[in-house]
Image: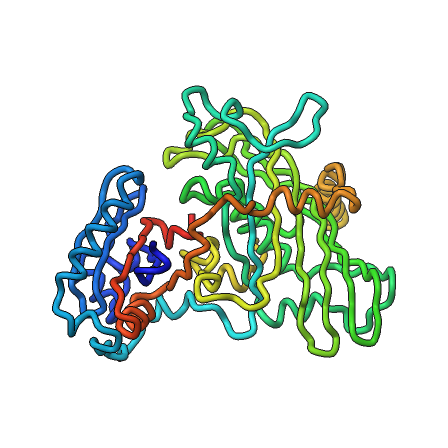
Amino acid sequence: MLQEKFVCVALDARKERGEYKDADGDFVRATSCVTVTASGSVAVVTANAKALGPYSGPGVGMEKWLYGKLKEWDALPAAERKPGGVTVPKPEKVDPKRAALALPADALVVRVFNRHLGWNEDKSLRYAVAADYLPGTGAVDAERYAMAQNDFMWIPREEWQALVPAQPRTNAVHPVPVSFALRLFRFHLDPCRGFTEGTAFTNSKASAGQLTLTVQTVTETTLSLRLEGAAKLEQPGREGPATFEPALLGFLEYDRAQKIFTRFDLLALGTTVNLPTDANGKVAFRKTPYPLGIAAELVAHPTPAERLHPRGARDNVAAYLEPKEKR
Amino acid sequence: MKHIALTLVTAAVWCGIADAQAVEPIVPAHFDKLHKMIRVQPDEQRFWRIPWKLTITEAREQAAREGKPIFVWAGAGGAPIGVC
């Protein structure tokens, strides 16, 4: 129903309500269409800034609520509902903080999935189940925790160009750019993603791991690279050191004629301990060491939604796009 | 003294790398299976089937053009389709 009857927009409640000083922020504040709450909020509004009301409560009642909103919509004057009936003014300015979170020109977009896993008795990997989580975790919550969690990685043009050896030779081994290693270690090998607002390992140095690129095949028009290595990420924690020690493997393909990456598949797999934590630093969700998998893949032609900024860029875009070694 | 300090720095960096290398590597032959296992599955993240907009202006323009109401989903820490 949402796809057919509504236009859907996903927003950062805190920034829209409190930070952005522009027409979109004004619209949000005027219609009160977002609520700053950890569980998220939904609301229905019209293009000409009429609020049809917020929704609060368990998700199971949402369909009925949506039908109610459509009834309210149908009760509006026909002139406001007909296609082209409302003129939306072009915004005079966009808040610089909002503009800073726009996808940089020619940046590579890579979609990143984090997934909690478990071990079978023979140490082979399996999907996580309710018993892997803290006692009292319900089946619905456990199912949600065991799903792939979503983030995006942005690789600026200069950096992905630096991943391509200038004179590739089969079996030659190259280091990855330091900024790429730092972005992975600080922002994308993070067991907190999908679980809390918190972040882990944001102070990591490039020496926290070792990554290399090996030329697998090279022709006049194509180049295949294998990325491999490992990382040992660690930070202090209230209940002991928090760690994630993944091995990494990836396969990259580059079209030398078009000068674009056509494949950017990465995999990180390892054991994590004492993460994620809650807002008080207490270990949440899982108490014992567990396997965490992170898989990434190229988004060749990002949709508007796939241009969503990475979590790591949310609070400091420059630190994400140009990560530098800390002294 | 300078030599000792340099040795210590070098040793520290090397230790980090050596530890990292101790992690069991991923077998290339297992890559496709593991990558598929970890990526999103067809029954997960169904909200991604919806063509979300990320700004009110974009949503208002499309809603006005098509004559539809706007459904707003907001998260306190970021757009809930991904930033958490």
